[in-house]
Length: 115
Image 1 (cartoon, rainbow, N blue to C red):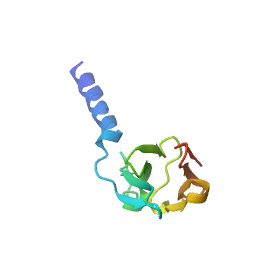
Image 2 (cartoon, rainbow, N blue to C red; image 1 turned 180 degrees about the vertical axis):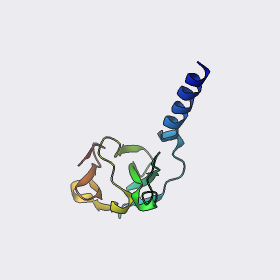
Image 3 (cartoon, rainbow, N blue to C red; image 1 turned 180 degrees about the horizontal axis):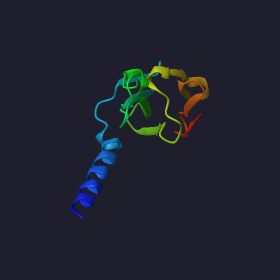
Image 4 (cartoon, rainbow, N blue to C red; image 1 turned 45 degrees about the vertical axis):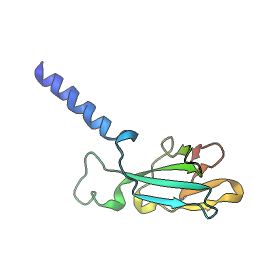
């Protein structure tokens, strides 16, 4: 019984380690050309990595977008997470979009992501 309690406790701690409030400092911060938006990029370490899969470029990323007041607009958590090696931040302010990888965007008005 004690082993089961420790197993459940350890599993809970591992899940919490991937929660937003434990992400820590962003890996990178990007500002839009007009300084109206900020994109913060966080990396997530894989819980299990095979040899050769532990490098920075193979970590998945989460992109969060904030307005000039620091208010949260949206993030990429509802979409497939790209790898850090595939990350490319491009601001399309005319269409109110942030491209954060090939065919992956966050709408700057609604905060919704799509891929």
